[in-house]
Length: 137
Image 1: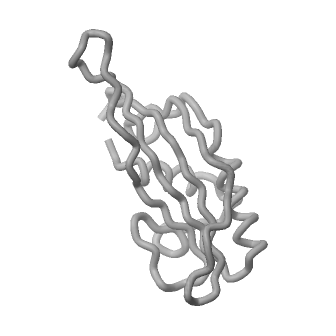
Image 2: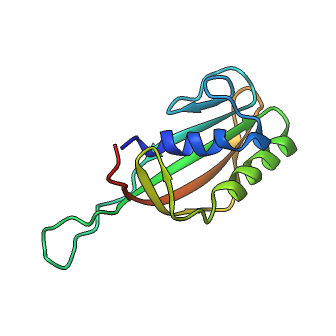
């Protein structure tokens, strides 16, 4: 299976209303200095996998956390895009992406994170994901 960030990228690209293009204004793992207005997805720590009641057998479900950071020269535009991404992802369930079944995606509400050194507003959403292998390659 892919890194969860790859699947979330594909979910965002699947919705043309938010006008994202990978490696142009949508990135994974590294926030480039330019352009000003971008979205970056970061894989982050989610904890240990669940164990089943049999003791040392690992559950088929994986739990991951991601952070999506939106940077924009205009505060209101950045806030609106962050909210659109939140509405697109929060509550999605029982979807298959790139060989992984996403049982549930939950997101924190958008929040203003900071202003970077170039006076661009940055907003974040934290995601918690539960997924399992679909068994298809």
